[in-house]
Amino acid sequence: MEPVSEESIAVTHPFLDLAPLSAAHFASIEDRVARLLATEQDVVIMQGEALLPLEGAIRAAAGPGTTALNVITGPYGQTFGNWLRDCGATVIDLAVPFHTAVTAARIREAFAAHPEIDFVSLVHAEAATGNTNPVAEIGAAVREHGALFYLDAVASIGAEPVLPDAWGVDLCVIGAQKAMGGPAGVSAVSVSERAWARMAANPAAPRRSYLSLLDWKERWVDGGRKALLHAPAQLEMLALEACVERIEAEGLEAVMARHASAAAATRAGAVALGGGLEPYVHEAADAAPVATTLRTPAGIDASELVAKALASDPVLPLVAGGGALAREMVRVNHYGPGATRGVVQSCLGALGAALAEFGVPVDLEGARRAVAEAWA
Ligand SMILES: *Cc1c(COP(=O)(O)O)cnc(C)c1O
Image 1: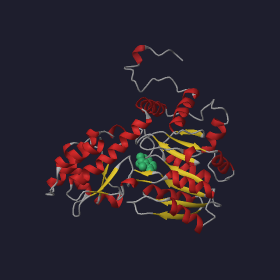
Image 2: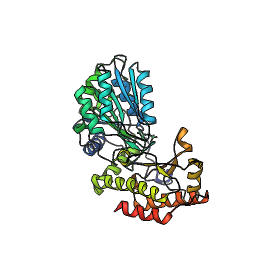
Image 3: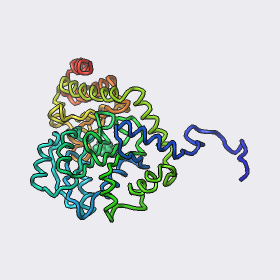
Image 4: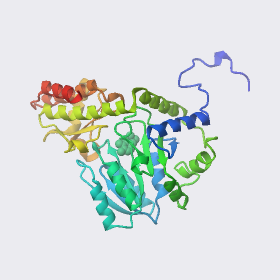
């Protein structure tokens, strides 16, 4: 090839013209993610948004011989149940109202009623509904029973402890786009030896497929992580490395504490604001540190309230609930760089001003004080 003359490249760009990402560099990013999860399990970074390993892990580990307990505490649980059924698994759905969390006792009751359960799928925290589930206690129940434990920790990682080894999680999926403050285009899953064995024994597990975890096991992990399966999503990998670096620099404990403060302050601020805006998740212990959901007062449409609030400050992390919840739920997505006192104050200020525009009396100063007190 002719050398490219300097004139032929108009401008260099920081996102472009990068040296290829080496296998060793890729492996080092995996190791860093493994440290974040405090896990000795294999951690595979998947080259797509978290739905890729979420679906890949279910299709690999579940099949016609599987009896799955699918815990539904929000919309993701519903999706997992559909994938499990599509794989031919027998699915026992355990749904709890979205304003609560599931308990380990409910899981034990399900095992007692259906001893054949050999797979449990659970969402740790649900950003969509604002609840979080007691995974440590549930993990103990799942381990006693001996089922394979699949966990969606996309909305919990970085916001609260996620400890697959300590909790006995066999398949733990994370994404960087929430509390890690990172990219959405890559994701990771930690895989236990038991889970690899279950996949290897499943003739319907995806192979030679973008969904395949076994491809990464056989051609990447077992090969000593020397050669990548295909060109990696280089920019997203570098962004993932950068966001883990930033978490390490602040300290994971400090990052999690910021999210816990943001959730407590949003909850306290909303209550103090009054005007009928209420925490959607009834018990504070069941509320996720990643995002706080609020119920709008009767007669006030949540989408309209959010639109009014965003009219004054369009960058605030406020959204209306998804689907049917769009009328009654406001989500404050105080995660990643949004987990600050300033963001929480601005969100409640904007919601309070919007409620006032609807003619609802609110206590803006009380909300401001409550946020400051709850944060400290
Ligand atoms: C956010 C989230 C995901 C990833 O979904 P996106 O909508 O693509 O961000 C997966 N699971 C849970 C529980 C989540 O909260």
